[in-house]
Amino acid sequence: PSTEFYRYRLYRSSGEWLDPAQVHHTAARRVAEIRDSFSGRSLPTATATFTDEQRQQELLTNLADEISAQMAHLGAWLSVTASADLVLQRVAPDRTTLEPVVRYIGSFGQTERPAAVMVNLQLVDAYPPLARAALMTEMVAGHHLAAEAAPPWFGQDYTTSALDTSGWAAYITDFVGSRLSDGPAKDAYTWHQLLRNTRVVVDTGVHAFGWTNARAQSFFVQTLGISTSAAATEVSVIR
Image 1 (tube, rainbow, N blue to C red):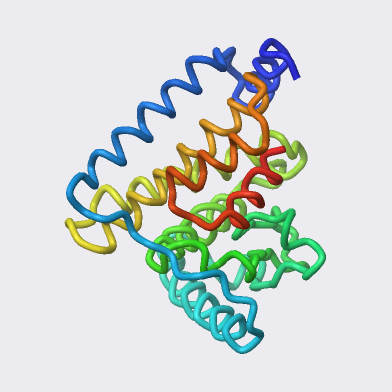
Image 2: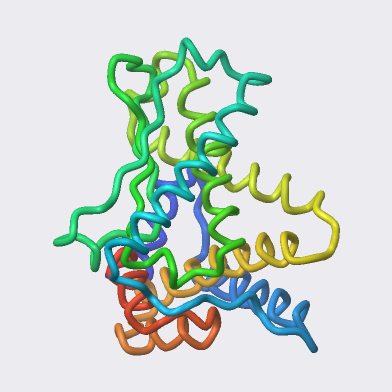
């Protein structure tokens, strides 16, 4: 799409007329700042991508435990008995090249059906372990809390509801991360900020400036150190 069309899409999702070039360069500067913050140290690293069924089941169990622990803390803000259940589901094998590493699907007040965190187990090991904890915080304390505590009309406009939960989820991860002391956990949240800003750079690059898939994938690999398969999936989701 043209830059003007993409600018309109930004307006539709944010309610403000944003300049794609400004968004692109602001995110790119933030990427550079975060990478500089790791000067002299290594970025959190990922292991190889595993496809072994036993390893994937182990990861699924670990993520389920992480969700259970976080759900136990939500009682301070949300009546858990009055909210929808939150289930963990694995992405179907034929969709692993199309789905991000995690994605939240809310019930938007319909307590008879569960909300879900979809996990792409083909990609989980492509992200640093502690960064996965940051992603789970965004899914549970961010998306789920925002969606389940929302008023009844919240889910009627998908664009508005998706924007609101995304904004709250980003705020939650920023809030938690900014209060961590220096160390591995702080590095994990900082890496997660790097991931989010990298996605903005690539999204604007692809849709407003005509980046090819190869250029977009290369930027993901060089910036985040993830595998080429994980980068390809990130780009396909943006496309």
